[in-house]
Image (cartoon, rainbow, N blue to C red):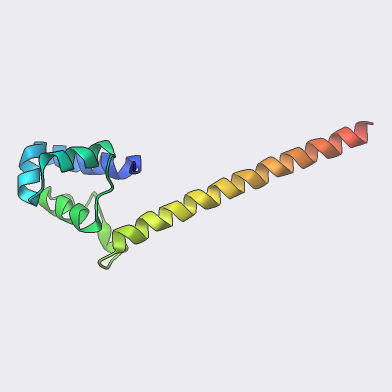
Length: 112
């Protein structure tokens, strides 16, 4: 599963801003360095708890304002909300497409 570009970019920027190498951050978070790499490349979706700890370790709470979602499953709620917004956008794009097709059909019929 690939994560959205935004979260991985923000997490990587937070680590770099803190001047930490992947291995150093991994040691602070008690995870493998490969976990840090996989999050930053988007190969895995980080848990809400991992993102909070990552932000705390990098002194980047300002970059990653997680308190807006709240709760133990707040990160999942945020991801679900992003998914719903994407779905809504796709449906709105489809409606626009159908309206264009309908307008073209009406135009063609009036020309005949």
